Image 1 (cartoon, rainbow, N blue to C red):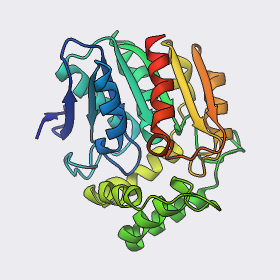
Image 2 (cartoon, rainbow, N blue to C red; image 1 turned 30 degrees about the horizontal axis):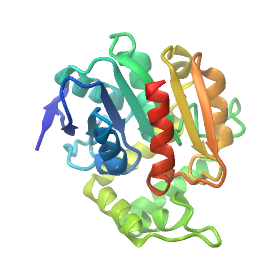
Image 3 (cartoon, one colour; image 1 turned 90 degrees about the vertical axis):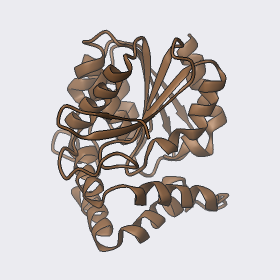
Image 4 (spheres, one colour; image 1 turned 120 degrees about the vertical axis):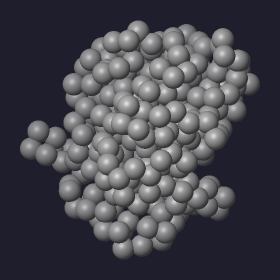
Length: 278
């Protein structure tokens, strides 16, 4: 397997496909998944002549199951370690859900200051802040995230079946077409990772205030969000992020779920390609 080692000694798995001289697109996956969640996008952009890279976040997938460092700062630093090891320049960074938070922190703190980023795309992304607070009354209450932690600790295997079978892909909606293979693939990816990383990651994706990250990003940034996202509600995410970005473009999708990158890959891939080429 292809891995790099970060400054704190953590081994990070990555995929790197396509011509090394082509413009790179790097993908950042959501919780609790892996680089495999980007299969449809990696094959699509590879066919368009791009170099495509995706890594497994620390504690996820095939990356090392370290006990510590499951926070946005480490996530972003690990991504930068991959970028530096592969010497990626003029790169487009695409992040889904928690991966969108990782992209925002990476671009603001590492990628843009180092002059390595061309554009960013945030898909169904968690920024600016998921948790309900006095300053963020539209957020989700802590009870929601405590429920995630309780479900994971009590029976991770069942919890990781219930999430994709229900709200993640909108399969709980009346009349939805349920794809059993998609549910099983979500479960497979989740169970590959570390329960500790997944447990700690809930705090990372729900309690990290990324307002300042979004304000710091200067490169063109596309924000994509499904209007029926039951995991990261659009009103507290994309509709706020777009107001904080200096160079942002917002596109929303009526009826699309949190898992629209998988269920609606053709539509999303076409829109992302147009933005990258624009």
